[in-house]
Length: 181
Image (cartoon, rainbow, N blue to C red):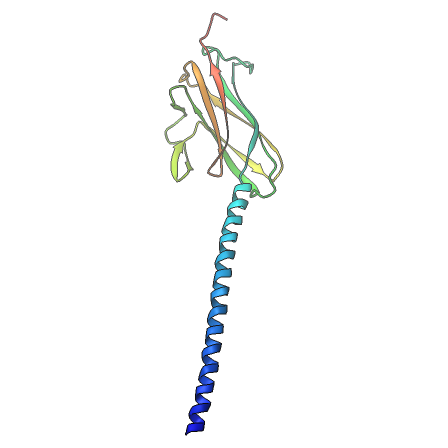
């Protein structure tokens, strides 16, 4: 019995040492896993940010019925918004809608209907005009028109461009009092 007890004690010590070693290795693996998950989350955020569309050369121009630039309130037929969506190989390819919001000096959004809505940051907000584009990763020239419905007032207007639930650009333009010519 003494020999058997001694043998069991020896085995028990070995098993306890092996158990401690396995627990330490498990703790290291768990820590490494958590670090990798954090890095993965950080990289996913960076890829998501890098895959967002961006604009350049954004211009909002009031135009008259002949298509010429004219910022006098009584001559404006349309607001012409032109820009280029920059090349982005990380962005999802395919058709999508691009929205513009035109905010007047009184912060009123120029819109055709209150039912013209899109989602931005979890809320449905009204847009002034939209246009579908086919984005294939290359530069895309975009022009969107907003027809004057008589809601214009003099002052500084803000134009915001949205795609994929993100604001991708903004610009300003002025409308002045109309004169005789």
